[in-house]
Length: 569
Image 1 (cartoon, rainbow, N blue to C red):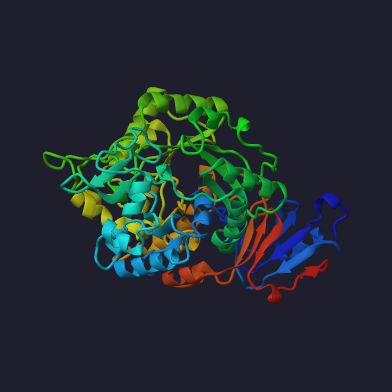
Image 2 (cartoon, rainbow, N blue to C red):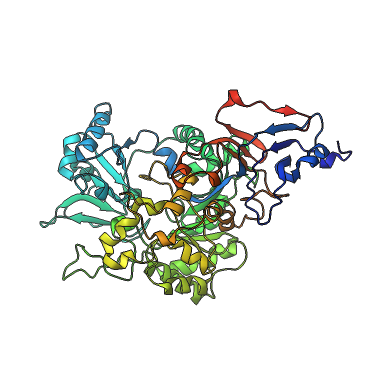
């Protein structure tokens, strides 16, 4: 036992298989010594006794692998947790066809007071995943109820409304959508006579859905975060904000030691706060939690919409559209230059990281050109992010623009499964080029990350990082087809996508994302070694234990765990 109190560990985690995610780790390392919130040392077996005393807790997990907690740099915690409460799950393949959707919504309507909303959560590209290969119609949703406004939210960019919902929202043949952007530019689909079909795009945050009160939202977050994230080993999240209340509740949870993750919020402007208010957030949000658990990270903007709504701004026209005079529609860039320049300047002055949603290649290049006009993205640890860059990149000139502007691309491997095969349906051969070309981008020197972008209508596995890892290796689309198999990457690269490389997006790879002395003790225990199993078995891996900042916050089988104190194994 050491004579130096400073060198004694509060906790030692012992495993015959430690995956540090650091380069050149000593293969004889079998233990992680933790003091307080941080990793003290990595130890060989004969070194363990030097850091323990009678007060040291020793957790020996035997053959089970230990690795750093996962980092999800782009998620929507509040939206995902709210979607688990009071929303009808209409997602395919649980609902196989339109009649299944009608039945699920009707069951909810039967127990909902007249006049209140009945809202269903459906997948992105729902029209490709139902047996009929189309969305439910307005008239079919009228069969659910004429007394309730009914909405099916097919992801975050497209919603189908029944007649009652259209009336509640005052959407008729004379309705004009707002000319400003929240997620992308809003639009209403109409039939040949000019009547709304029920499909609205980029309008979810403009519709008067029933809101949770603060107590209900707190309960949803307290229950939802462990279920959606902690049980899968996620210990740090870049949260794209929804409401001030949601951010305040997460801060309060962290301040009272009830938050099992570190949250790095990006304030959505103008969805959560105006741009000016977001950059001066202290007037709206009281941050009292420790910085390691909750810290306002940046500001999020939308430069275009989603591919599912045909509102991503792309270089080539969509194959079909409702425009007159032939299809030349390529989506709209939803930001104005003056607003974007102001956002760049205000975030830099406030020390906040700017994250810009840009699905389409034209939107990404527009953002890069705007940055270049101001001298490029800020250097250092909080460079400007472009969300979804790397998902579809038909031309290498787009990556050249990323490099010139100095941005961080933030792709989502899970979307390869969710909708990677549908790009071609919307964009023809152009949509088959550069789909999640991770191997190519790595060879070019890009440091990439994996994130869930969990939202309304995400696949049920979206928040499990091993689903993202599986997508990187298997590259299997929703239909079962393999997309561009030559772009598959190694398991180690995929694990880095979801750990230390994901931490680098937040500028935190020096304190999390790998197991090394001085880093926060975010440690997870797996039930099997991802290196020793078939690719499809990655989806079966369970996380047995989760330690956040040295504190155990998740145990899958509590009755099986027996820890020792004081005696080195």
